[in-house]
Amino acid sequence: MDAVYQELLLDHYRRPRNRGVIDDADVTIQQRNPLCGDTLTLQLAFDGDRVREAAFNGEGCAISQAAASMLTQLLRGRTLDEAAALRDRFREMMLGDTTAATDKSLGDLRALAGVARLPVRVKCALLAFSALGEVLRERETGIGNGESGGPEVDPGA
Ligand code: ZN
Image (cartoon, rainbow, N blue to C red):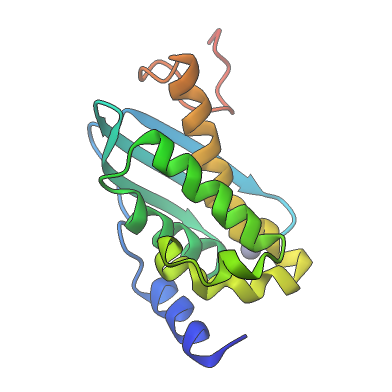
């Protein structure tokens, strides 16, 4: 991996942005990556269909935690459509798309381009994005009203 990018990744890992809890979050999604043992909780608060606040919590490898830090940094102020576009672009980069890897819209996330060459770590990088995918699904179907605590919660409980 490129040295500058590796530095950026470690910086996000050691000094994560937006790590914490949002008291009035509209959605809280938990994800696990059993292959690596990474856990992640993504929280978002919305203002209409725009992300007002984004935060995460979790434990795991540098790639999973840095990706969450980088993603939450980019999500603030974005609409749901923009967030979906960001997720799609990142997935393309993880599939080895070199134009995605130089796309400025991905911000610091471009530091993870090299992960595309490490198939076992791609799931680590995508963990935060699969959480975002859950958020987008919840918002689309209108069930993300705070009544659902995420995919691991039994809706009948
Ligand atoms: Zn991992």
